[in-house]
Image (cartoon, rainbow, N blue to C red; front, side, top):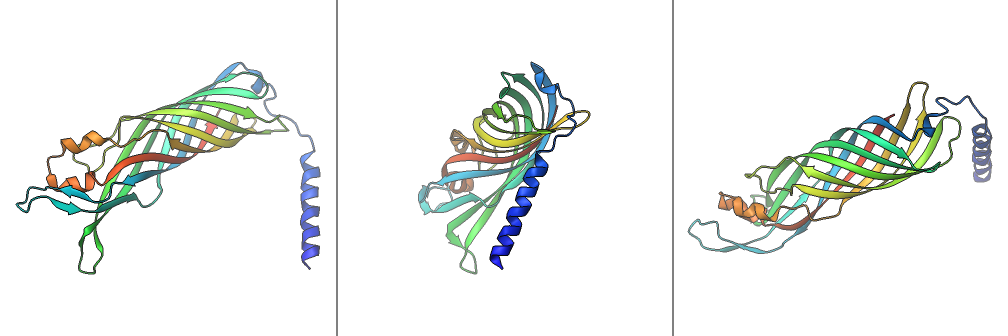
Length: 249
């Protein structure tokens, strides 16, 4: 039985391969011959932060009890969604390579949870504090695209790039605050679909922050000393994103 199923799957794959060789009328046959062109982009993304927890710390909250040891761990306990908008300009280097410059904006909110291991609730569990960390980034991605030869009305590709960003959000009364600037390494895959009136390019890419994006100077600006145990709980943070973007060219 397993052998028959395997042969049936092989037959379907062979049939699909034969059908894929059929040539069809090409939409916009000369669109890839342009030296330079523009477009717009929209998309969605998931954000995450990797934290390095500091461990035990000595905190003086000025309540008359003197310095005490606190242990607080912090994490972004889920991938949080956001959306992206922007424009693009693309330069054709040769038949395979293109250089894309894509200014855009990334909007989202990260949900952070602090676990105070030094203070337990009535159930013997660590008490928790949360923070909604809103983010609004201005970005300008520089991507190198390597595309396969076009077949019919589609053309797959891979991409690699760097994406510097400027963070426009952040409050002085938050537990955690991020730096104003960061840079992401981008790697992804996509496919061009040639439609009658425009070219649609869905792209899935993975982005990883190259620097420590935690604003360590934020602690000195806190007025509420009870926030220190939470703001001091991490020493380093790196941002990550998974982005699904649709380019219209």
